Length: 189
Image 1: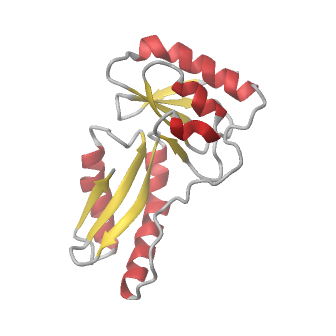
Image 2: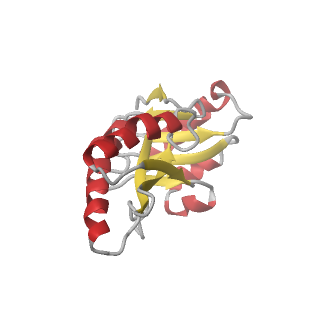
């Protein structure tokens, strides 16, 4: 098995491309070893010193490390764990409750249409682009009184030095262009 690696805009996140589906139905994020109970592969990756996050995209695995470790030191261990996990025959993610994706919202009349349009733009224009960089962005909430859209950054997008530019220059401008009610975009933890 050959696993390609790609740098991401986040220097602490590396994207691994094993040439097969990883999480085709929905991206999955594991922010700690405790979160990785549903995935033997994610759990094994957290056993490697320096791993602080694991993200499964449709056909990639993004691993985030702490500042204390260099990629040159942990990359071989990550490649070995990914290869072993994919060849083990175990499921990548065990059945159980998956992630819901975008935050739910109450159908509150006027805002429901705006929120649906925000989610549609994120799904069709934003998420495919950020997946190329090893990340994901989900709708969190819309503050109608201020016109602010709140988004959750995942994978390589979380903690990325260029995420503010992505939010302001990219996503905010896109949403403002299509939805006049939008006045700003911000990230939430």
